[in-house]
Every structure is written in C-alpha cells, then in structure tokens.
Length: 530
Image (cartoon, rainbow, N blue to C red; front, side):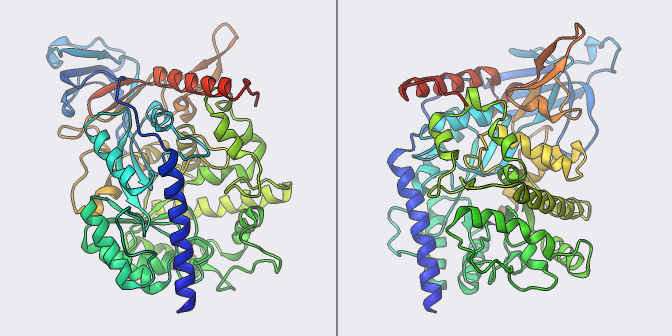
C-alpha cells in the first residue's frame, strides 16, 4: 500500500507541475480575426471528394453548406466532360471554385497539447499550425490546465478564437477547487471523476495507475459517459499493461506503452540492463526500443492479444511520429519547416538537455537508430494487422517534443500509417471518421463530423494536389517536384481549411506563424540559423 501512495503521489506532482507551468504562461487564443463565414449558403463547386468512409474518390461534386452544416453533396458530372449546369445546386451567397482540386473531411488529432511556458506560450501559434494542416478537431490530453482547457473549448465552440474544435481530456488530480489532493485510493479516484464530469470535461488522460485505482477511474468514467485514454508508462506498466487496462474498459491506448508488455514471449517485465535509470532520458528512450526482440509476430500470444483487444473494442492511437526521430535524428533535426516555423524557445527545448523531457540525444548512435527501426517494423505490423482484423486505429501527434512541430508532425503520422501498410484511403479514414467515432463512443452518440455528408458539421479541407498520390502535399511546406521546364518547384500545401463553416486561408495562417517566429527571433537577439 505504501507503494500505491508513493506512485500516485508522484503522478499527482507531475500532473500539477504541468498545470502550474501552463497556468503561469499559457496565453489563451486571441479573439478571432481570421476566417470568413459561416455563410447562409456556401457552395464548393467541381471538387473531387475523398471521403472519410473509405470509399473511392468521386468527382466532380458540388457541396452545399448552410451556416455550419453540410446540406447537400451532389455528383454533377463526369471527369473530362463539361458539367451540365442544370444538375448543379442553386447559387450560394459565397462560392469556392474547387475544379481540379480535392476535398476531404477535416482531420482529427487525438493527442494534442497547446504548448507550455518553455516551448510555445502563445496558443495562437499552435492553433494556427493545426488549422493550416487541416486539423479541425483535437483531443487535448490535456490541452492545458483543466480550467484553461474548458474555457478554450467553449471559446472554440463559439468560434471566438482561431482554433480547432476541442475535446478536453484531463489528468487525475487536476482542478483549482479540487480539495482531495493526489489520487491515493479508489474512493478518491471516483470522487475526482465525478468532480470533473460536473465541470464539463470529455474524458480522462490516464497513466499506468495501480490496478485498484485504474479500475475505479475507468469504471466511474464509463458511468459518467467520459472517454478514457492512457499512456501506460514504464514506471507502472508491469502492473497495468494494455491488456490489463482494456479488460477494465479503457477506451484508447496512446503511444505503444503497454502493448509489447502484453505479449512478451519469455519475460513478464522488460529485462533492462542493470544500470538502467528511468530518470536518464537516453536510458528511457533507447531501452524501450529493444522490446522488438521480446515478442513473436504472429505467435500465439500476438494473435490472442490482437483478437481480445478487438473484442474489447480498444482504439489504438499510436502517435508514431513523436518517436520517429529515434529512427533518424538527423532527418528530424533538419526538417524543411524548422527554419520558418519553429520558435526559438521550442528549438531550445528540443536541444539535448539532461533535464528536458524528450531531449535525449546525449550520445545517440547508429545502434540506437537500428533498434528503433526494428521496433517500428514490429509495431507497424501489429497496427496494420489490427486494422485488417477490424480494430480501430486513429491519428494523433503529441507535438512539441523530440523535434516534432505542431501540424507538420500530424501529416507525418499519415505517412507513417501508410508505411505501416495502410492504403491511403484507410489513412484518411483513420484521420477522420475513426477519430470522430472514438470521441463519440463514450457518449453512445453518432458522430456529426468525420465524413462529408448531409447533416454533418462543415469541417473540410481543400487542397490543390491529390493527397492519395503523395501525402507530402499536405505539409505546409509542400513538396519539391520538377516542372515541365526541368526546374524544381514547391507544390502543395492545404489551400483552405473549413471549420464550422468558417473558411480559413491555410497559407495565410502559415504566414502569421512565420511572422510570430521572426518576431521571437528578433526579440531573442538574432535570426538563428538551424
């Protein structure tokens, strides 16, 4: 019992340190001055529709939006043939000519943080990067402190700020007027869940709590119709792995923690080196990759785990991008977007530092990168098989750590799912409908976003290039291609992001971010080179 108190108290302290840091400096979104609409009647004309259902692209289509809802999606002709104008919906008071362009549902990011004191204190910076990359809904885990998250959620719902739609998931123990202190026992756990349910949160962000406390948190969350997602970290995973948590009713596993531990072939806990120290960030992140050797793909335990997790309806939100630098730190450090769009304060946080979480490149070696590459091969195989067997896999980013920038890292997640074996249409489904289903599942309600259909919220993305051919065209920096004159040029980048019927110029949002970065560099004394 002494261990229970010590471990839960440690989690409480970490959670409140996060909250205190954010309370002091997180700047709420400024009053919205971007975006046009919503309109009484907006029509998007002539687009090729890539829907979130997994269906093949279709076009040309006209899409009618009234205020913030889609009211009509109409096929209006055939490729290469003039459109019969008589088949088209009547004129809107605002129209977008999307002929030759592609329309998709807005993306859902199920692992989002809005920044922090050390990295990105102005949430406008984060929000605009998300919207510029088509992210119209985020699950904050937490977005920030409890009260901050709920206020920003309400302001976004009223479109008072330039931000995605926000679902607020919070860590146990948070709340200014929570008088119970750290979560020490199942009774505390249940009281806190009821407390935050009354506050209006949407769900819980959990770690690997002791079994009795985890059971109470999840059970009470289910009773209160709150969602649950868990990062089953190494300090508690030996007593609470993915299978343990799923059997208790956990809704979503984020990252990979707990998954491999659920199917070790010859161990019950990871056989760490005897000099392992969890507080050494390089130990923490280098050793976890060696789990690839501890499981047997398609072995009896692998197959049993896959089948049971699907039966328990556990959602996998892998967030592969956040650890991808472990496979190639040079690539991550020198990504195209850092020069224009990474704040100096965020870059400083990325820089190797023994006291900064995720800045673990103290002596990163080829050996370490090979271990991570092998780990990803096994992890990706499980995710692809899980999807093929009927399991739900979604997209999340967890940006702000390990050289991963908001918005840009989300698009990398799409690429990583394709690397795992997902067809591009399966990737889009994971990023849209499956994310919406995951958020609505605890409520027992049908999603009202995630696909483009009559009755759904007007959350859409318009892009000039075909993302199914190359997801790189979704990056704010686009992709380099040789043109007909044999000259390299950058193409792509999202053109418009529409959230709640409001049309945002994605490139204008990126310009705003670039201006923020340049201002910060000037205030920092120099225009830093990366």
